[in-house]
Length: 330
Image (cartoon, rainbow, N blue to C red):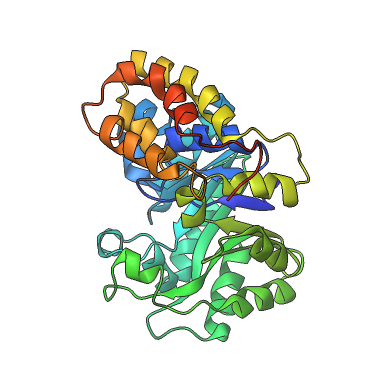
């Protein structure tokens, strides 16, 4: 699987509608689901939680949990639903996640994590990967990080996605944990040197193709997060500059291609705002982008949005002279 560039799992962001939208821009980037808890997958509404459009592929399922049994069950269910990879969340630092014993707090229990990963790999033919941080609280030296990864590697895991910050458990909010702990990219670079045969993916604070190219000189892949959500047409730059793909739709063409999907989803009972909220940043940096955001915010990103307005959205784009240049990103 090509993990050269991927979009990070982000709660309340990378749902199936966002992934479909991003796939209209990029054919090569690997996409991830939001984190879904193992127990919810095993015992909940599987179709509601896991069903996705085949056009989203390749797409990886990220699971949160700490029960080897439940994680194995969730892994098998994810495989049956057609996902291309199963990823274990070892990096989420929220208090709620820690209370339920999954996410970054599991860095304290590497042997339990190893047991979980062994059970997950034993039940599936899909690649099982992990996403973690470089440390937690005051445990932030490279030696401890190296030992943690070594224990997970012993289970047969080949792909390690590393957010190059430590997690401050119970001290910072999730938002603060994305900004306050300093980035230590050198930890991830050193990990690649120490494990040259493993696939090492770097994540954290990466926002442009120049940064992606720099990291790709040191590691195997780059995972981007907030930049992909807030400025989604960045993916067009990535297609062109990283994947050397010149067949890129304009922003206007992206919306034109999204409309049939929207109409089909509306027939299934999906609310308009559940889809269109993901497109707010599409015209970022373009003439008329403020008109786009205002129109969406007032007409399509409210709970009881008028579904008839989807038929007039392209007129709004053209009227405000948005996206005159095909294939040119902000």
